[in-house]
Amino acid sequence: MNKNIEIEIQLISPNGKIPSQKYDSDIGYDISAAVDITLKSNDVTLVNTGIAINLPKNCAGFVLPRSGLSTKHKITLINSPGLIDPGYTGELLVPLINHGDRDYDIEVGDRIAQLVLINTNKVDFKLVDSLPETDRSSGGFGSTD
View 1 (tube, rainbow, N blue to C red):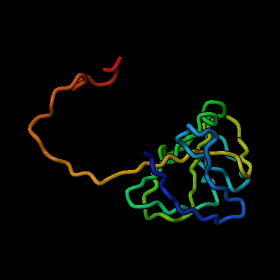
View 2: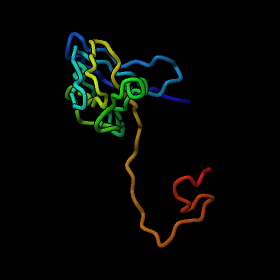
View 3: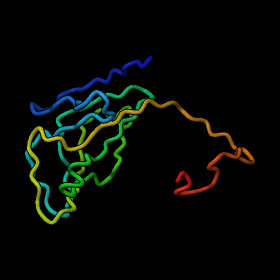
C-alpha cells in the first residue's frame, strides 16, 4: 500500500501556486511561474515560482523540463535536472534557457517545469573484488535492444 508523503509548502508570493498534477497517473507536479517575464533568445533567466517547500529527510526533489516547452519552443532548464535537497527552504527558482531564435513570454500561472519527488535512503557502498554476472553485465549503451 502506498503512503502519501506530506510536503510543507509556503506561498511566498500572491501569485504562488501549489504544484499540481494534470492526471492522476502523472509522476511530475507542474510548477508555475509567479511573474510575467520575457525569456530572451539564447539567454538564461531565473523564473520565480512564489513557493518554498520543506522536504522531509530522505526525500529529494528534482526539477525537470516540460516536454511541450522544450519541443515546441526550445525552452528547457539549464541545469536539468535541478536537485532540491532536504533543508533548502528558500523560494524555488527555475533557471530556464531559451534556445530559440525569438524571445518568449511567460505569464503568471504558466507551467514552466515539473517537480518529481523521490523517497531515498542512505546508501553504504561496499567494496568487492567482482560483481555478479547478469544478462546485461557490461554490455553498455544499447545493450537492452
